[in-house]
Length: 255
Image 1: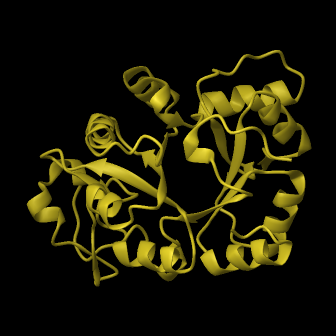
Image 2 (image 1 turned 90 degrees about the horizontal axis):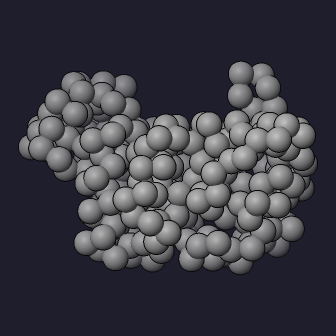
C-alpha cells in the first residue's frame, strides 16, 4: 500500500516509473532525444542531474566533467555555456539546458539530483521563474544541500532525503531510536549499498509510517522490479524504460 501524498509532485495513481537519465541504457543519457523517447513510451516522470556552467547556465548532465560521455572534455564548472553547448553525447546529441527540457516537456515531472553546490541557486531561481513547484523534486547525496534547498524554498519544494536522512531512516527501521528530518517527501535509495541491503519490508514500513514514499534506483532487471513492487515501494528508477513499463503493464499498474 502506498502512503498518502504529501506534495502534488507525488500525485500519481500507482507506482511511479522514473526514466533514469531519460533511460540511459542506449548511451544517450540526459539528452533531449532520450527524454523524448521516454515520454513517447508514456513516461510522466523523468530523472536527471544538473550542473552549473562557469557562467551560471544550468545543464542536464550527470558527471562533473564532459569526458566520459561526450566527444570533448573539461569540467563543466570551469567552462562557459558557449563551450559546453558544442559537446555531443555519444558524438551525436547536444548537452541540454534544463530550462529547455522543462519547456519542451510541459507535462513531465522531474526528479533532479543537484550534483554540485553552484547549481542549487540557479535551479531554485528557474523553478520560481517557471512556477514549476509541483513538477520538480530535488535530491542530492549531500544532506546539507537538500536541507538548504528546503530552507530557501520552503514547503513549496518537494525534496528527498540525502545520505544522512536515509541512514537515519534505515536505523529507525531496525529499531534504533533515530529521528530523520520531517521535511522530505520521499526516500530515494538503492536496493543495496556496498553489499548491505537497504530496502526491505521494515524500511518501507518505517518510511510509510513517516508519510514518506520510497523510490528505488537504479533497477534494470524485471525480476527485481517485481520483488520491489511486492515489498510496496512507491517508485522505481530505471535505465531500461521498456522493461519497467512491461512489468507495470503486467501488474496492471501502468498509468
